[in-house]
Image 1 (cartoon, rainbow, N blue to C red):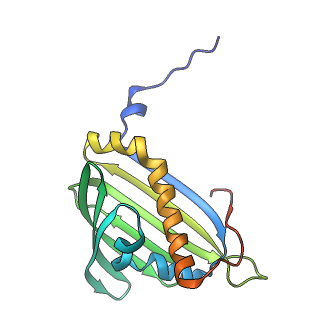
Image 2: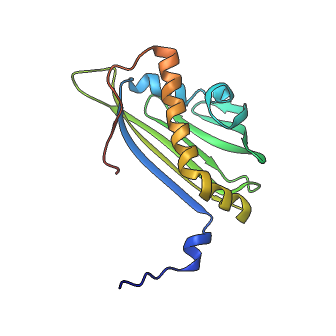
Length: 173
């Protein structure tokens, strides 16, 4: 009989992390355009009630998002770095909802034979300030993150039509 040991901190940790790598049937530029379109997140991103650009200078912007995960609705402000068409990186250290939140979308060329493909590396890591938010996130985290990924691909489909190839999960970095 095998005895399993674990530490209580593994159960109540407030840090959550997700990584995914996919080959998809949209170009780098198309996916960059969707992910960088923060002011319209409220129109297509699940749980996003409000998305506002507060400031924009060159490739750095400041955005405020209001997120609703019933029964909780919160807002936070992020610094977003844009490197067209390669990267959209958001960092939140505003201290109210998160100790920190970092999301990173990296876009790279896909198949050489098909310019309407790209490889997406999606990364999200965050730590809630509140243990309550952490416990809610533990229950819903995988579902919410996957719904987010799907929402961006669906928005690309709405804007650009059917993808050139089916989405393929790749090995994580």
